[in-house]
Length: 345
Picture 1: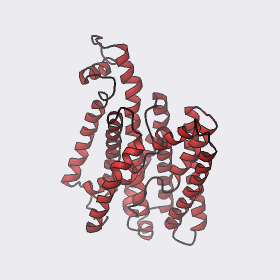
Picture 2: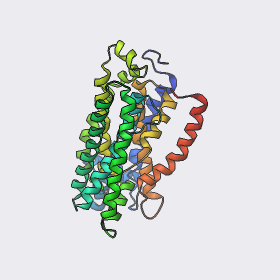
Picture 3: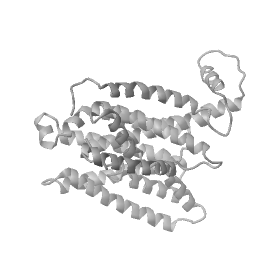
Picture 4: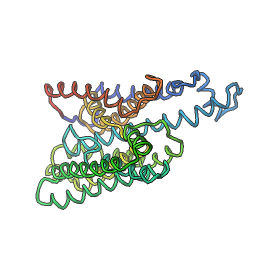
């Protein structure tokens, strides 16, 4: 039940605490890695770009901070925020707690596009472009088929089912590419990309991906109050003056753009867009005016923490997709048991 525009005590505390935690983890992440740099040196290196300070650090330290760790940290924040916000928006729009950012086939399409680019020996930029185009293409096919089939029926249900079918189709083409790929070079590269990682991210990758992700986040935040109204149903939302078709198109376009951009630079990272919105909902409730910003901040914080674990748990870096699945699956089981008792709102 939504209660005006006031925030509950728990929601207000969460909104105040999350940015503080995010900033703290942001700076601590510069210290984590095989090349040791103290937090004081990190602050000095960053501050040295803006004010004149005694230059007591080495050039290698500055390179590690600005060219290796900074792009990776920003990428983790962007990808986590994009996946979590997309998942929360989809769950509200489809009124289904089991919906994730890949429900309309964007993940399968991006995987196919990236795998095809790898098979054709494209560069990293080509792989990212292929992933983005593949993700957008899959959702475009899903959207137009569902609009055509759902003209006289439940459009949302048809859209979900169409997304599942398109995802299966694109996944079958992905399997075909993996079958045809060179088992010594191309196949391992495709497999590793599908596991998800930020190990090879560059500042150029971050600059390119940040544009669609930030635009998508801003647009979804602007229409988040419409998701509250749409949660009451199509007819009720229309009666209250909400153009449900336009809102649905905006959410789908923005969520697809964000997810495709995230997958293009990070590979497949599962369960972030499914788990984080659930946790955010437990903390602040179902009001999307609060839920979406909290999901965005929690997604960024969660993936940054997981990326830090990926860099430190083992001598060889663990792919992010493996860690998010290992952490998310048992936690999601706990959430299912909990929400079965209390219900989902």
